[in-house]
Image (cartoon, rainbow, N blue to C red; front, side, top):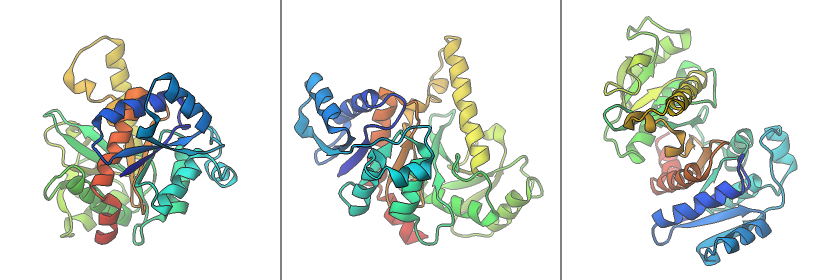
Length: 312
């Protein structure tokens, strides 16, 4: 297995990216290798300064970088030797089994859609994020920012994509699905959410448990899969980050709130494309990068893209 890593992507690249790669090594099994994609001279100098055996990594050079503030589609098409573009070419050729980057999110999504392509039958890919629960488990939320406005059939498909992810990556048997709404009643919510409820309740391919109100998030009453549009999902994860920040500023100590730290998750997998892709937070440092790499490994091991193709 080869895990492709964009060394040049992120606010603290390449230093924090390489540090995370060093830390990930001790958790990888024999046969699992990290492919470092970026400025070869910088990479080799850093490996040498850290006294790291260069043979444990595969290095693929690139000469350009897509900046965090650049226009995603334009930069991706113009900077054909950027670390992101090179990573996607390797992924498409099968020379790496998964690709992770904390770089320009838009460029990563452009590459996912136009280089490895969306799986036939998938209306819109989604970003998936794990949410910690008060009883110590994890549920997943999708979408968390890719599609801010979704029609009912897209939300139904998110329920299917989330169920596949929960089954194969989290190893949940017959995962439950909840539709995030402002009330448990079928008549509550926007037109799209009400329409999605009608589609989900009669669909035998998902284990639908009904509408889920936001006060059930992070609790033992949360379902395995929580479905919402990308606007709502992004608000939820940003609120979680804000609560964690307040908690840290006040020097509070609590095991649950520590689990809200995005560094524990590392990144958000893109589900619905023909390859294994994980996008990290732009502010990722050492620990977050390490977990992004390990999360990519888990998605590869689950063979998620192939299983979605088969089921969709």
